[in-house]
Length: 246
Image (cartoon, rainbow, N blue to C red; front, side):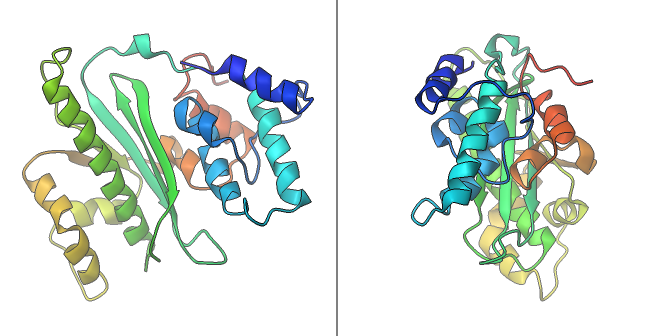
């Protein structure tokens, strides 16, 4: 699954040619259509740049051109749906706390895999200010589990899959993992329990498992912050079937 022809059409419209010096999408970005369908590696840039769509400057136009240049340089990146090898569902969830300097809102994102193939991903600025890193990570996990629930509900009605094993959510935030698994609470977390009590209930019933992983292998890190060329290449190798990592 790729959009190479669409990328070359954009490049032609804006008179771009490949430029190997551009190895990252940009500090801000665009191209929502592309990002939401086949290119999760530029989704964070899309969300960041969309904040300025009503009041953009030459800096934002330059940023947009860098996004276009990046996707032109990497136009062959593709997700190979035929590599789906099982009915196992797992996901990666991550968030960056208070990343927006103007609103103090956090960015959160997740990516869901089916049999080793990424099929759903999301990146969004959270709607309310999180009071801690744990809260931002927990809210991102909530959004992730909701998506998994909808996905597995489809499988229940689909004859292609006879059974979907318990989905796993991977997070690099031990505090949010523990908060999901245990009834740990204090005055700073009571409001979270009231709003998202159902997530703990689902976990106790065994609807999903949540596991801690090291931050350096959390694929959802690509949705939370600006990343350098080597880091993006490493994460893209875990998303796209034709991107080797050296």
